[in-house]
Amino acid sequence: MTFVDAIKTTMSLGLVVNGIVPTWLHFLFKGTKCAINETESYMNELIQNRLKNLNEDRHDLLSLLVSNNAEQIEEKSLTTKELLADVFIFLLAGHEVRTITTLY
Image (cartoon, rainbow, N blue to C red; front, side, top):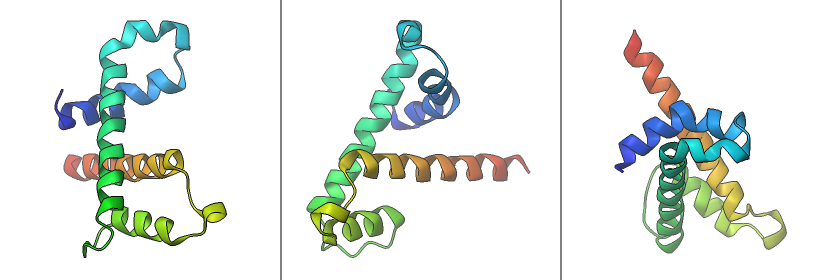
């Protein structure tokens, strides 16, 4: 599954499946669960890539979030899961803005 397909599926059905559909019915949405896992894997890769290359001069929100988190002391830094959630929210927000903007 391509990243674009994974994002489209995650943004359209993934939020509903994870938020509303009971876990015991998730077997009916195998393609959607695959898209969610693919999106999560891609975002984890991005975070790990940015952590490895903290010295690269990038001017984007993800790099700023990851580098500031790496500089924090252990108790105040975000966990990987929290970083992943933030990245997903930013991705969702950007997708939503782009979708609405292209409609007008």
